[in-house]
Image 1 (cartoon, rainbow, N blue to C red):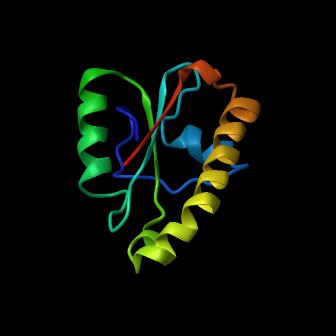
Image 2: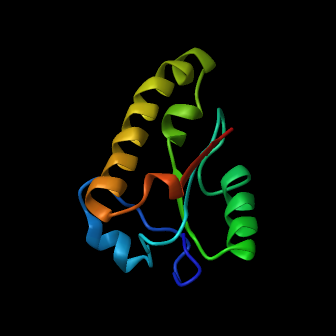
Length: 112
């Protein structure tokens, strides 16, 4: 999510910088990575409220990690997905830094 994007959200993957640029991603701006919690998802409540508030306050990049298919299930199953989701998120941040030129100091991860 960015101020310049005219779409609600864009699905991005590691290794595809073009889709990030098309969504308005700017590597010189701060980047917030939002990770929802159990029984939530990246398009409502926690993430949506933070996206609106952050974009109102600052022109930045927002990336919401949507692991809803794993989070919206029996708690022990969701809990077992936390480490793999964390590892994938770390790989995505590495992609931002190594391939997109994002400064590590400009990345802020928020979870619930």
